[in-house]
Image 1 (tube, rainbow, N blue to C red):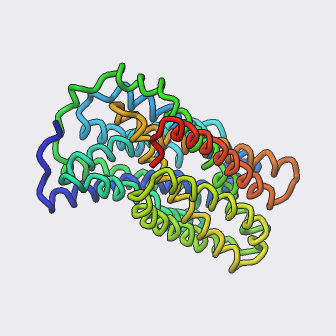
Image 2 (cartoon, rainbow, N blue to C red):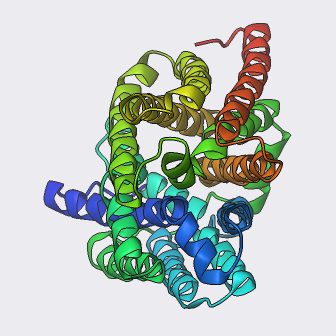
Length: 395
């Protein structure tokens, strides 16, 4: 049984501490993309090779999220959150201290390990702290961490990295991690460990076909945005012909779209999670295809980038709720599994975007690859919908 709901001020303080952790995670995940040319120059590699650090972070999430979700399901949740943020802070400090390609790859992998587990455990903590009937809204607040990071954290860290050197972006994130560790300890109420949780229950979720289909929808469909967004800085500089100091502005626009998309999706999923997921997948694919040409001009590039962000943010929230539904008793695994799938998409998209750039197909190619991945996600989603129709459970 969850503990009694804390008072409103205590709940607000606890949610704020958890959201701050999400902001730090979102900042470190996306700031690499905004500073990719600076990072490549700093460690002496090409831009596509520097893009491997994005994939390394994503693989850390993919491995860390399910592993920690399963092995940590019975641990006291506040203590687990503190430990995850401590590891996150150390790994980001190590990223800033890295002097060459291999140490940076290892540090980025380590920084990704707490990502999915933190969001998964924080979502459960927020749900359990909230008053009855308001758990979904509390989870929505936790999910705002990444959109807020794209509005404020990523542009600020990108600007700092351009001004003082790319390493300082990671040092800033490490500081956010330390602050979150302290605030979680002070603000989040102690929650006894879940005695009903077990490794067997968590692992059993993998026997459910809909869990695998939903994970694949995220891994493939969301890979589309990362094929393009992983290289957003060089695309804006080379295709749109913008100066480097304009990049943070476009990252801010992307962040605004994330906040709007999450707010809009919060209403849509109350009507239908699956239909919201379906519409967001189609919208993101169309917007990515359009961006391949819209990026030739500054204003259309900004408008379409905003549309992409709205669509993919709606996709993320719908996918989170979908996984929590189909995972059954494996709440921790379901909540964390979303972020594992999305970061597998991160690795896949960044890699495929780098492949077409290395092949010399030009700066439009990553966006077109992204549109293709969105189509792949749509096909998988149609398979999932077919299973629902056969079971008579289409919402």
